[in-house]
Length: 339
Image (tube, rainbow, N blue to C red):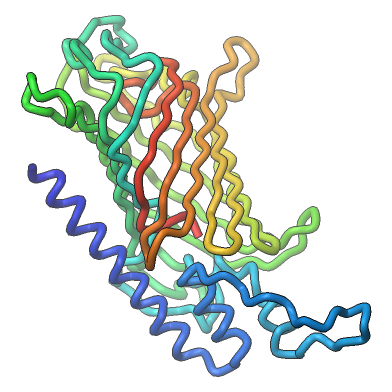
């Protein structure tokens, strides 16, 4: 049960990061920006409009105009882009979504996993269609304002686990745990692009592996760039990458980019406490054309907790399944979102 205990500890760290966010909001002097910061951190539903309509000649309060205009600063709050959002180094911050899905159903469990060498592994034998899945993710800033008042270096960590909790006959084993540490350099930008604001660009080094030995071992390293754009209630992340080559005699999944892809596009909508994200990956090849789509919907329940629905279809739902196509539906709760 050690992986589960680690998940609970890191989930608590993410909850503490929300408390840190509130302290940042408290320090903002401007009333409208402070209110917008609180609303963004807590996922608070905006109050109803004044009973007098604009058609009747009512003037919208200036404070509300400022609060509305300051929306869309989620990327700055999450990545500490603007000076008022800087919070220093070596503190846990949310990164990717943190969730627990007690019910995760697959239409095609991978009962005969194969790597590039086409060797079957015993990992998938007897798989249940329904299992549990969780993801924990956090980041911490290592260096701040490396180039004048811009350029921060972050360390990020994400762990995803698929747990055959309902397979009592085999002692409910963890089918797959994927570990993903990375280093990320982030720069602030502020340019208009196609009706959005280009708010950030980052360069990262990413390692991803499942910690297994042959023939079930899966791992790869990649270098990526990410461009973050946003508008009101919306953010767009564009992330191309290149794989770092490995020696052929130890490369167990050398064709991984032809399945998982060579880039990812993520759109995130955030409004009234709801967060909907759509992630698209593609091989960027016409023959064969492969990839995946992931739809996540987090909706308010109570406090920091949100209900969480997840729908996945395509290749690479987890590393052992990088070259296996399936459609997956998950239901559970989440603690942190993209924004």
